[in-house]
Image 1 (cartoon, rainbow, N blue to C red):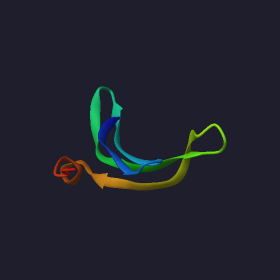
Image 2: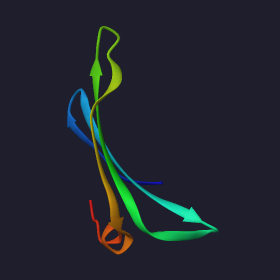
Image 3: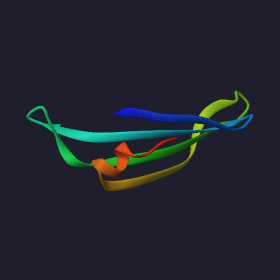
Length: 69
């Protein structure tokens, strides 16, 4: 898993982008997944809670390698 970026959207909201690829016998498969998770401080204690989640699965690694954030 690779951290591709962390962005502050608002004072109480952040987005994290992660990339994950599976290794089999120490060899990376040809595709990976991109996870976009948004967290927001909520409640009386202002704890971070996941607000939104998006997954793009089966992306060719050659395309993920070109991703610049």
